[in-house]
Image (cartoon, rainbow, N blue to C red; front, side, top):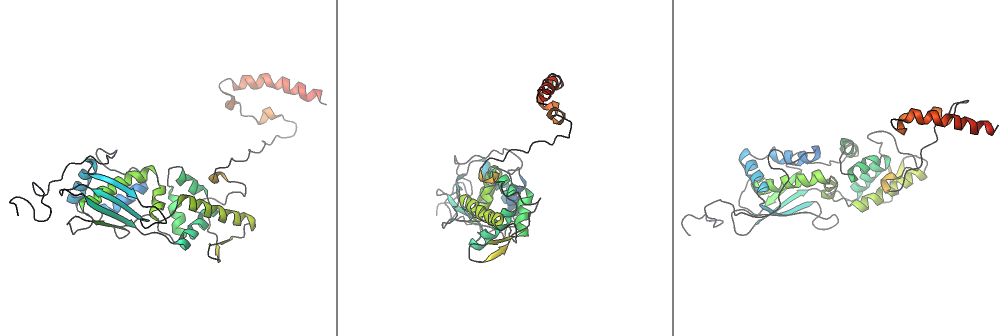
Length: 295
């Protein structure tokens, strides 16, 4: 063994990281996650790790030591896992795996049942935000969406550090948090939920709800009937409200006009801009003339 080198990684000087040009986070200082759901992941790690490992993990993340990060694909052997490569003090980078337990087909069906009762929360997730109502909807259905501790988010690394999480895994979690900020559906992907598959399931459940007159019995995909979950926020959408599937909304109903009044009386002149009152004043004689000529 060469003097001055560690027996397990041959680094020089001992323990120093080899610079890498990997993924660069947006965060230059302070917290990595800016959303409440992203912070759930960093909190799970920070509650279990000591300040030293957290500090080094943040340094590794900001220095570009994470050279690869990929979220597993639902329906494959990588489902529910984040696979990453982190350059440390060895010449060969370390392999890091984060694991969040996936939901089976029956559980995904329960999620679809809950979302069919209130698809507006799914619309929000697809639009780039994760309302707390979505997590509550999952909890009402008996599903744990986000990790509450490190026992829910398991980490492993090929480095010799026996303490979990190591600084390499912490660096991956910090970068993952930024990705979750950008696309909250990544949380569902980590649960093994495919975007298109979930939309199809919810559409089937919603069609069943509309077709049975709202009795609340929908199939669970396994030949059984399951009670539809009550919406976490608000009531069910009307049968023709299909905005979450990408179809246009129906036109708004005509405003009610009291007997003896004209449509101008129901018009908010402010919608016409600063000169709205003047426009209404000019339109009123024309409307009266048209109405008089029709009598």
